[in-house]
Length: 278
Image (tube, rainbow, N blue to C red; front, side, top):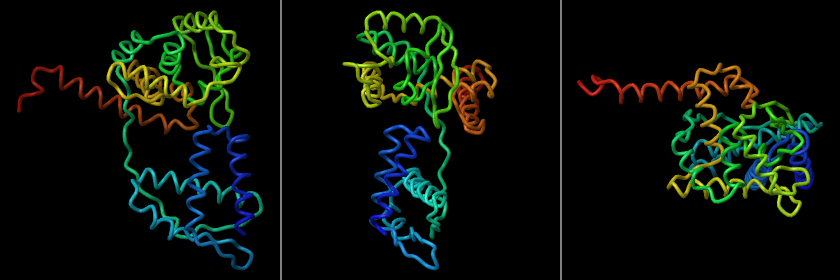
């Protein structure tokens, strides 16, 4: 049974990469969670049905924060669904949901981003930060961006599940791309080195390095948050923002409207002369 599940685990990871378009980082996280889980999960078979008792594993990870627990259990649920869809019927036992508090994303202010851009040391650094901020890309989408998908006014982005979307390209970003390409002899992808596509880790490290110069710890995903927040605060329709971000549901985009409301309230309290009087 262990040998069968291990083979199916590898098939599942291939499925996530080839058919679902998951990033290398996400696939690695799924693999680590599954391998850890199957060291603790009780597995048994009754009447042709496979049962996974998650309780021993849940006890093992119970001290972790709720978000981490949810991610680990999500990997197991995804694998269970994959098995069921591929002829290995199974049931997860003790699979209770974990309540995770909804936290608002933390965007970076426009002023801080501009300051960081003035401290970039080369075109590549400047372009990476600029594209994440002006296009709202996921780091995996930036990495896989092909030169042929860049036109004068639009960029075709391949997102999760290989879904394509077209994102408007502002003139200043297009000029930066053109200047960058003038100094590079790329074959296929926008970001290459020695004819090899740059890894997500290198792109992520570049963002961290740039913002460290302004004493900030910033992730690529925060720049995506900043893009979404800027559009919504500028009165862009939520349906348009959802489409530009490549969200499968507008409900995912709703969290940014809450952030916009929180910022407006914060700014109001700072601005109004009576806000500090009790």
